[in-house]
Length: 255
Image (tube, rainbow, N blue to C red; front, side, top):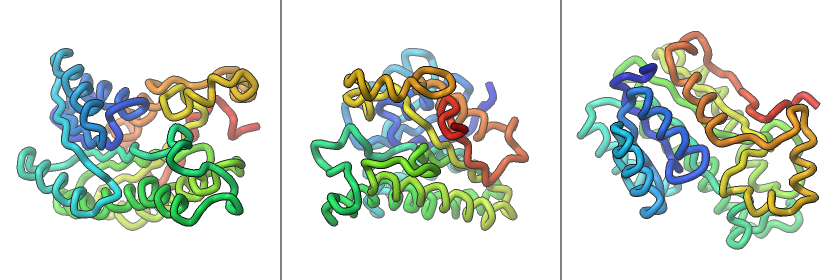
């Protein structure tokens, strides 16, 4: 029970890495808030965690909308009186190719660029902006931001996504410096190819899948492996770790 009685907000917890983190954090004793835009997904995860005998509450949330974020935080504080953990996991990527152009700078429409950054980067900023005052008042808290291998390497083909995830890395570092004096730790995970709905369509292409499997461990990752990394960083086992940018990528960043 590494998170016993902790209150944890996880964005994008309706599927993939966020869902696995929600299940894992709840199993470790946390009271989990599922901040998810897709109502059906959020309710399903809430029900699944409840059936396992653990504690979770779904609150429909658009992290790119400041008023929506404020309402989420106000509700959680009203009901729980504190917020101990924030896992900024929500984001858009390759699974949104039908909606946003995933391409180079030259081929990305400005509207798509702004929309991708509004979710991936602005969403992280807004969640931190409204939760940090609670953590400062408590003089404790742990934030983990989910970036991407694209945030630390020059991965081509999705430049707006890459820019947004690079921004998450830089934001994580500066917040670690700014808020360490309040006993708030801020760390960042950079997953590589993880078998989630976000890239499953891409993995269905044998040529692309073979490329992903060419890393040192010879396979794509599993969402529960990212969840385990997040669990470590938010737990007391990582009490002297802040400002860390941790690849969870099967060794790709070492190549």
